[in-house]
Amino acid sequence: MPEENLEQSKGIELVDEYAKLHAQSAQLEKELEAIKTKLISFAQSKGVKFIRGSTKTASLNSYALVSFPPKADRGYIDNLIKEQKLWEQLSELDTHKLAKALKENKLPEELSRELKLIVKKKEMWRVILS
Image 1 (spheres, rainbow, N blue to C red):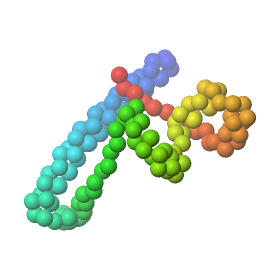
Image 2: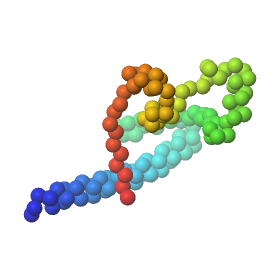
Image 3: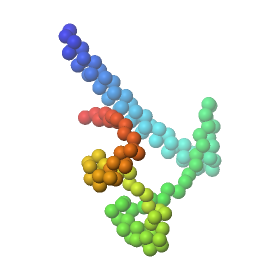
């Protein structure tokens, strides 16, 4: 078998194995979520926060999650915070936007130069199955 066919075959095997494990992972996530829901219901019905298994103990804690409207709908909240002079204290730099502007050379030269001395670059990979 020519070397090119061996390489192609190896690639096929790797993609197939990745796809198989990816599907198993997604299924396991669903199963975990279902068991978690059952654990929470059980704990609530018994009024307990700890459930012992044969080798592990599950600790269940509830907490309140505060959520705000999407960014596009936050003008009113932004204005309230600014009126109270708390904007500087409560706002935060959007590093994703800054990274994009830096990558696309959309920043002033001096700022870009200074940032390039500070930032760390790391090669990242994403595998997408289609």
